[in-house]
Length: 107
Image 1 (cartoon, rainbow, N blue to C red):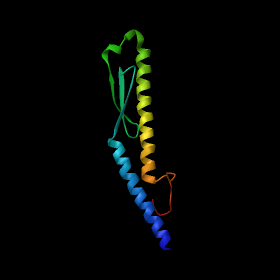
Image 2: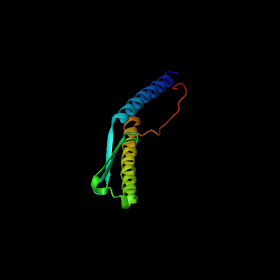
Image 3: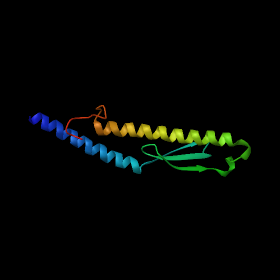
Image 4: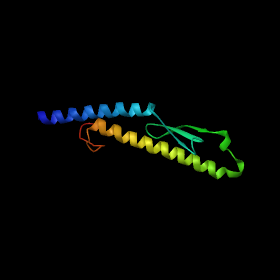
């Protein structure tokens, strides 16, 4: 029974570290640009969009499609970076264990 108690405690410790990591990711900012820096997007560590900046010289009413493409590229790149950062943090916290794990008694 002692081994089960140790396993449960390890699970609780892991859960606490994951909660701490989630909180840290909320405050992390990750940015990416497109069009040589004409459009930039900033997301949090979970990939949620926080800010967008657009160089006024790229705003051309005759070519809104290009601006939309730059916007999409910047946001997508920032979200991809956030996803990679998230995966890296999960690996650090979990020591390589596959997550999420649902262990009985840890809910």
